[in-house]
Image (cartoon, rainbow, N blue to C red; front, top):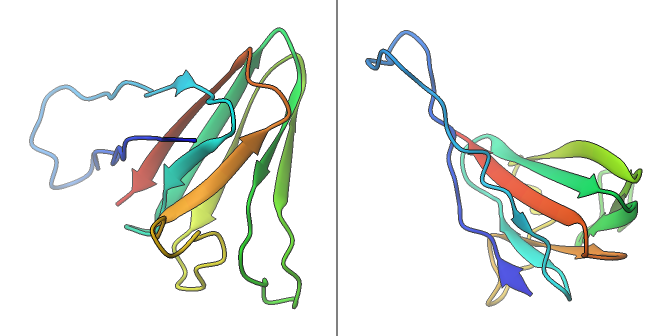
Length: 124
């Protein structure tokens, strides 16, 4: 598994002093065996996944039960050429936090990695 670098979005609001803005999307190729995505700071993490020619399923490992009493992984299904996103809220439940040596990370696996890219942004 590869660990994605943490990227935090720049807030552009009343306190933003710059005249220009914009950040690179930060996509990287999906890793065989899966990726570890940083979560657990700010308001949450927006994870974007895209495919380019071959569909795939992407699984976000839930390690704790939801408020409905189930430990249910979240599965994203991508078409052959598709882009989807998921927002993991930093609500204190630690539902997706892998814990231990991987504290602050969510484990993400793929049905195939040939045409899959992933990016993650922390919402401050």
